[in-house]
Length: 126
Image 1 (cartoon, one colour):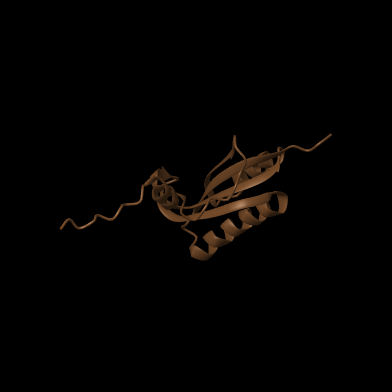
Image 2 (cartoon, rainbow, N blue to C red; image 1 turned 90 degrees about the vertical axis):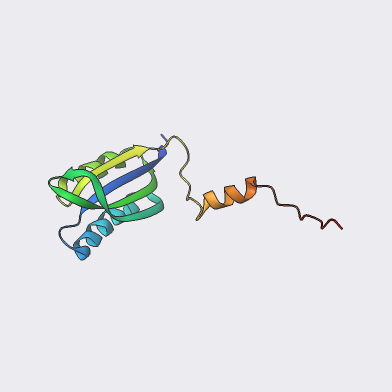
């Protein structure tokens, strides 16, 4: 029987009250777990941000988004590990409907330049 490989994306918010070093350690811990059990497509550190509403009376958190491909059993294990770690304030794992691919550095800029027609030079009327 073939193993099914799906594309997933996970977002987790780490508590920043322990300091920058502790926050980076928790982010590294979970990105390493994902890398050992799945094929990492992209890691996006959004950094320290203000929360929309306080979680456990804490107004800020460190956001990280990881896009990866793995077998169907791994996301459940990842959610279990998120729930065990007290430094993870919130987390979410979703299965992507499309194939996970790394995003281009500036796709919005490329799309804008492709769609806009080139301006034609105006000839001086004499």
